[in-house]
Amino acid sequence: MPLSSLTAVSPLDGRYGSQLESLRPYFSEFGLIRYRIRVELEWLIALAHAPELAEIGPFSTATVEALRRLAVDFGEADAASVKAIEAETNHDVKAIEYWLKRRTPNNDEVTKAVEFIHFACTSEDINNLSYGLALEDSRAKVLLPELDALIERLAAMARENADSPMLSRTHGQPATPTTLGKELANVVHRLRRARNAVASVRMQGKINGAVGNYNAHLAAYPAFDWEALARSLVESLGLEFNPYTTQIEPHDSIAELLDAVSRANTVLLDLDRDLWGYVSLGYFRQKLKAGEVGSSTMPHKVNPIDFENSEGNLGIANALLRHLADKLPVSRWQRDLSDSTALRNLGVALGHSLLAWRSCLRGVGKLEVDSRRLAEDLDANWEVLAEPIQTIMRRYGVPNAYEQLKALTRGKGITREGLAEFIRGLSIPEDAKQRLLALSPASYTGKAAALAKRI
Image (cartoon, rainbow, N blue to C red; front, side):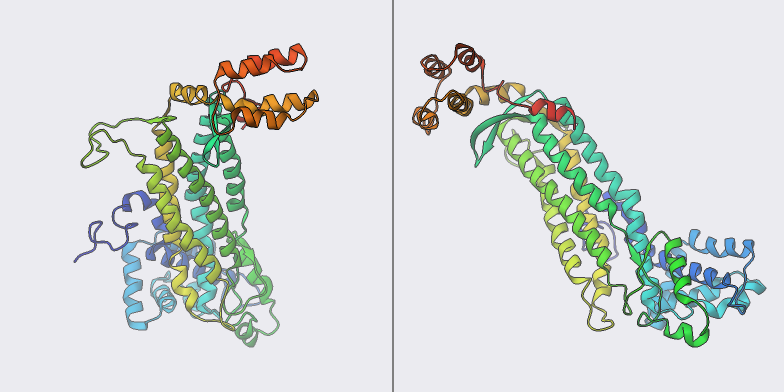
């Protein structure tokens, strides 16, 4: 069957393909080839501008611009040409070298230097830098903006609902009240910290030959400072230079990034399940969309499908992210090829993450707070005021304060009137009695509103 969104094996390219177009420039086969082209060209340009390597350059400004345009203008037809060469060579990076030798500008400068394309490089010199660039670019242009949008929407929602009292549930049971905004603020704070961890990972790179020692480089030019040139190139690409590697860059920074993304995903998984639960309790209504169906048999249903979709994709994403983070830094001796196929799934792991973030944001956008339901739940649970009552009793030395409230409320609840009668009979100062009598579950929220407003 011809490949289409209907025949694709992966839902990332099928059902969800339109939602993940923004990742294709970075993690598709086309994207990988284009990054490899860029790295090969930048290495050639770096060689040409080293005065000690007189056989190569220097290149004129026009030649440098023409070479860089090969990467900028690289299109699908060019990628297909590379793949055709790969079908002959059975080697993807060697196919890049051959394609470049055929497509470099036809001038004396490049003709003299053409055999220095891929000079002293192993495939991993090109690949590690390409993946590093793909992760850097996708993080800056797609992943962080998407995560930031979700965080800011939740922060706005937290501030909007800072004063909306809500019954807490610890162990699933009625507990000390909070506000809806404060509970969202908790998530925002966690997500900001997780987001900063994702943003702060420095992607590393190397270009030091077959086993990381510049062996071939020094065989050709023994007196040249190859490590300095390698560092200069890697840093010019916006990556951190790793001076100690085997044939492969050990992928520790990739593992750090994937771990950071998975931790952000875990926070969102917690949020998805909580919001799902609040919808179930009726704390939120969901906005209706004309034409949508909630159930194929129950016409009344409005299901929290966005949070369920997000939860499912977060599970898949984290399974992949954690496998890759564990697998990629492990390589037998100086190199085995098991990382190669694993690296091609970076986009899959990040794609499921991106789907989950967008589903969560879509779900949040459908929520409407039901203040009446929040108030009903609070008013049905006056026993939660046992905490402040026994705490104030302790302050004023009333014996067995906790035990008295336990006997009064545990497992049976109590009415407003019952609590008021108990309070009036306490041997505590009158002003303390009046403060307790003025309390309600809706007003017993501590500093929740202030905390939510400053998020």
